[in-house]
Every structure is written in structure tokens, then in C-alpha cells.
Image 1 (tube, rainbow, N blue to C red):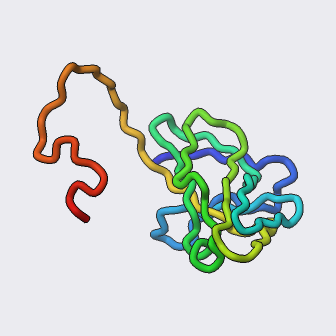
Image 2 (image 1 turned 60 degrees about the horizontal axis):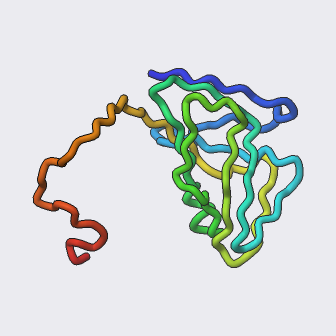
Length: 147
């Protein structure tokens, strides 16, 4: 089990910390810590504060992902999805939302706006070589299988 430390930022005592909405949920819902309702017009993007910062072990990252209900019902999604929060970041967690829907969407204080999923980051060693081992696929990329 990993321990992640959360610090509620001043003035956000009423905003919930990340929370799982069901026992087996992979993601923790994030809540908007906006001081007043924020209007997000179609095609517009805004950085929405969550009211907390955190510290996690060096071998974890946190991924910020859209909430499926907001995406389906309103076209609200995270622009850089999944967004990565590195283990050494100590600033406020913010969510970059974009409105891909047809109507203006109002973000209220305390509203669930995204989800955060923690992932283990393996230790990687980069090695430069002159040649790579061959595979059947080779350099076949986008659409190479005909699909």
C-alpha cells in the first residue's frame, strides 16, 4: 500500500479532498475549488483549481482523467488527458477542462470535475544502441494492419 499525503489549501476547508465514489473505483473524484461559478463556453478551456496539494512516493504518478458522466452529458473533458502529476510536484493540483459540447457549462464550487488515478512508474534505464532487435511488425505504424 502506498501513502499519499494531501494538504488542503487555505480557504478550501469546505471542498472535499479526492474521494473514491465506490469501493472498487480506480479513480478518486476531484472537486472544483473555484471561488465563484465558472462559465465554460463551447470550445473554451480553463484551468480549474482543486484546493489541495499532495506528496506521493517517488515511484508513483497521478493521472488526471475526465469524468465519463461530464463527457457524455455535457461534452466536458480534460484537454491533456491523461495529465500527469509527477511525484516531486508540490503545487496546487489543477484540472485543464475544455468544453466540447454545444452549450455553456457552469462549474460550481465543490462540483466533481475529473478523476485522479495513481500509477506505478517503473525505474527505467535508457541505453543508446546502433541497431534495434528485429520484430515481425518492424516499423509498421498507424494503420499498418489495414484497420
